[in-house]
Length: 174
Image (tube, rainbow, N blue to C red; front, side, top):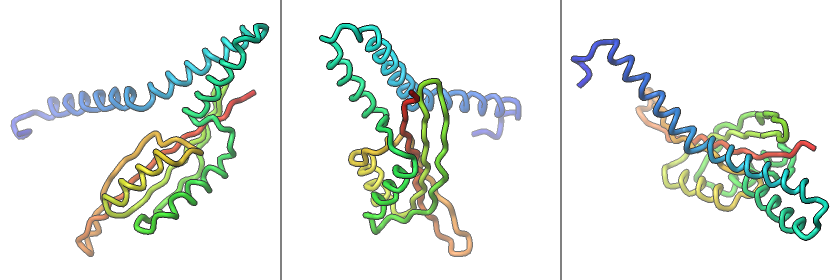
């Protein structure tokens, strides 16, 4: 199929695919989080404006607490979250933890974003079940990305399936 294309055409097709995948990643992951963060910031500013009017304060506080829960703004220490991830995954005997990266920390004007990356191995159903349970039941941090991939052991001629999971939680900067 690609035999009759020049290298320039192949390169342009590759660039087009990279741009399309970047756009899809932005639309699926980053834009949702940024919109939620922007909405939360707008509510916080609205709360400050209406501080003198006590009738709206409890409602806005409840909305901010709800958005904190949605984007993971629970104020837990990153080490506690990482230990919680390990404790949660250790319940699954047919899934193996292959790697847990060091907590990555990014600071914004009003938030500190903590990212944890975990790599699991196992069969497809076990990994899918573990990821599903993490997404639904693990409340200390949010699953923002899951990547399934395989590696081949050429000596044994076997493939191993892995799931790389990215968790993020946010902390307000006062």
